[in-house]
Structures are given as structure tokens and as C-alpha cells.
Amino acid sequence: EKSAPTTVRNYKGWHNLLAASDPLACNSMEFKSNIVTCEWAANKVDDVHKSCPISAKFAPAAGIMDTILDHIGYTPLVRINSIAKDLECDVLVKCEFFNAGGSVKDRIGKRMVDEAIRSGRIKKGDTLIEPTSGNTGIGLALAAAIRGYKMVVTLPEKMSSEKIDVLKALGAEIVRTPDDAAYDSPESHIGVAMRLQKEIPNSHILDQYTNPANPLAHYDGTAEEILLQTGGKVDMLVAGAGTGGTISGIGRKFKEKLPNCEIIGVDPIGSILAQPASLNAEIISYAVEGIGYDFIPAVLDRSVVDSWMKSNDKDSFLMARRLIREEGILCGGSSGSAMSCALQAAKKLKKGQTCVVILPDSVRNYMTKFLKDDWMEEHGFVDPAIAQQQRVNEWWSDHPVSNLKIQQPFTILPSVTCGDAVEILSSQGFDQLPIIDEHNCVLGMVTEGNLLSQIQSGRVHSNDPVTRVIYKHFKQVTLDMTLRDLSRILEHHHYVLVVTTQNVFAAAHKVHAKKSIYGVVTRIDLLQYITSNTNTDKGES
Image 1 (cartoon, rainbow, N blue to C red):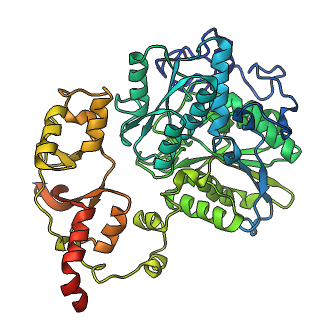
Image 2 (image 1 turned 135 degrees about the vertical axis):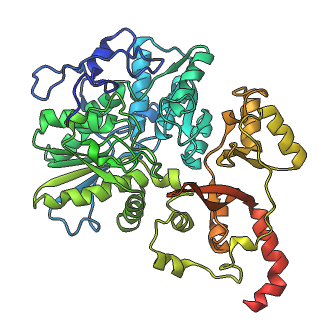
Image 3 (image 1 turned 90 degrees about the vertical axis):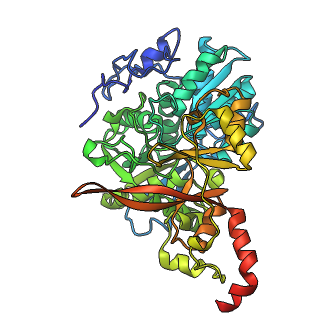
């Protein structure tokens, strides 16, 4: 089931876009318009991509660089020893976190900005807007800071705080969006970027999802580097797919130069990029950042991918930790996705053959996530026996959440305005409130900090419904959860929602579980329980 060249939203006309007076013609990010059939084919003599000329640039730079942007590209290719010891073939990893901004996305950030400058599309002082999972935003913000542009980044709530901090340090304005918003909804990071582009004068969405500079950065750069570093001897290439620019750019180059090399795409469970479609189960959330989508990005050419493998969160994070511990490679979670799948795929390769794996980014972006034992345990990504050994047992550890003094919470309806929500939070002394529908089902949370930030920035107004600032990235716990597990969650979250489950009969043989709010628990509630009961309960435990 290979994708046809004219598939809607699967734009393949990279060279046509580059030749256009306005390279994108897609500032509105309309995926279903401006579809062009690309004339690329692996056996064509003439290069239809109109690529940048390859030069001695693919040699390690010597001396002084003009800017840090010159330190993008020519990343090291490193042999995997310990982890791949049971395989006959050589396993090499392309360490993209050695790029200036710390990820493979630096390549496309620089290329997209430089192409826009070259075409005259943007001028100094303009504002660049980009919907991203973080790394593209960092790459663009890096280029924008040096080239003289303002930067606005829209990204989902699940993305790490480390990425946010780096983006802010580079001068980018950050706009967070709900994790579960569909790509084509107004609340998604793509939808919000489209709205901001209409509101901000002289602003542009360079759009990694349709911009030909995305795959061409890898067609001209990453792929050529691998060919040079391996002497053209690659039998298998494994790469994760997000926008698809990396695997499409490398894949097209390899189909021209190494037609027998097998290209394997890695797609997380919960995403729909893999083929055949039967590989893709229900669209669900996943914790690994930077790969997978609920739509097919325009720059993704699935025809160059020979086979797809589905990755899962647990294997991805455990493998990333192994790469750090056993190989000293300080990589991110999606690197673990690619490597865990590569180890399975490379079993069929023989001695003397080579598998190359793309490692997109570094552990810098995830210091408070999979690098922390508590985070891994909280999300169920460690062996329970190992987790039990690591636990410190206090007198209160095995007490249930129901022991806490949990007050019946105040809740608000989605029809409440932002202005009224501010007044309610202020008058009642709350930092957050649950938003429920008429059936008492939880829709999300409204927090004082997020509400005030949105109003002060002008993104929402007092008379807007509170659903405009609804926050769906929160934790739910049950009354029988232990305080040990609760304390680990509260190390990373300011509050949790305590819920109870009730079985509701809709008919004689039709029953469904309904969650109701029992209360909101904060860190101070746990501390008050521990301190007020230390003298009495400690001796009994």
C-alpha cells in the first residue's frame, strides 16, 4: 500500500515549490490545496529537485566559524557495541544531537529560513510562526535569533519543560495547545498558528509539514553525509517519522544511490503514519515526543519506505536509557524508538552488512522525564520488582488517598466566562477548578496561572467561554491509590484530580463506567496529613 503521488495532503512537489516565486504558497496551511505531482523517480537521470550543490562542506570545519549556524550538519556516525553485540551486522547511529541546537531539526530550521530569505519571502524584523513538537521551533528560533527575525512557537502541552525553557532563552514566544486536539481543529498547535498568522502583521508560517526545504535538507545534507561516512555501504536505514522530512529526504537519495538499501520507518503506536493501515490501531496519546501524527504530513513520501514498524513508549524509553548507560550516547526518547525497532529489523542482516539508525535529539530535552526513575515508575515504564526495590517506605507510604481530608470541590460549567472564572478563583482562594459538563463528566481544568497568562497576552478576553483556556494535561487518581504513588505524581504536578467510578445502566444489559469528581488534592494536602499524623501513626506502623 504505497501512497500515490497525488494523495491529498501528501504533497510531493518539492522541486515545484522551490521554483515558485513564493516557495510555499501555503501560508494558510491548507493541506488540501495546491497539490502538485512530483516528477521524482529513483531512476531519473536529471535531478528534478534543483538541489543545492554538494561541495567540500561535508568535511569537518576547521578554524573559526562565522556563526553557530555553521555548526549544523556533519554529525558523527558512531558504532554501537554493547547493545548490538548479539547481531551479526554493524549498527551505526547518526548522532543528530551534535547539531548546534541539539537536534536533527536544526537542519530544516536553517534551510527553511535561508530559502525564505533567498526567495525574498521574508525580511528582517518579520515574525516567524511555527507549530512544532519543540525541536523545529528550537532550530527556527536559533536561525531567527541570528538572522534577525521574531519567533512564535505553538506546541502541545505534553512537550517537555526543557524545550520551553530553551525556546524562551532564544527569545521565542510560546503558545501551548491541548494534547488531544485534532490537527485540523482550531485549538490544535496547527490551528492556533494559522489564527496567529492572520492576527500578527508581517508574519509567516514556514510550515515544516509542507515546506520542501524540510526533506531537501536531508536529501542534500544528512543522506550525503551518511554516504560519505560509510563509503556508500549501507544495507538498512532506520528512522522515526514525524513530519517525515528526515526519512523522505534520506530515502529518496538512497533510492537513487543505494537502491538495495532497505528503508524502515518507525511510527509510534497511536499514530497513523505507518503502512499498511492495518498497522495503525486507534489514535491514542503517547509519551514519546517528536514522532508520529494523526494526519499524513505533505512532505512525507511513504513510497520510499520499504516497511514500517510500530514503537511503544516503554521500549522506547528503556532503550534510550540503555543507550545512555551502555553506550554513553546522551539521546532522547525517540532515539530509543528508532533503536528498539532497529535491533529487531537488523536480525536478518549478515556479517559485513550495515544498519544505520538516526538518533534525532539529546537527553537535554527530557531531564525531568524519562531520565528520572520516579517519572518512569509513575508512567509504568519500569519493571514493578525493580521499582519496589527502589522505593523508600515511610510510615504513610501504603496509606490510601482516601485517608486524606479531601473537601468536596467547587466546579464550573463550560459556559462560564473567563472573567467570571477569574473572579471565582480569586474569591474562593483556589488555584485551579475542574470544568464539568451537565452530566458531571470532567472536561478539563482551568488554572489561575494559565487563565491570567492568556488574558494578559490578549489571546482570550474576559467574555470568552472558559473552554478557550481549558487545560487537559492533568493527572487523575483513585481513592485506593497509595500515598507513596501519589507523592511521586505530586513531584511533577501541582495537583491531581481524585475521581470515583460508578457503573451506570443505560438498559438491562448495557452498562458503562462514569467518572465523577471526588476532590482535588495538592502537595499541601499530603504534607498536612504527614505532619499532623507523624506523632501518632508513625509508632503504630
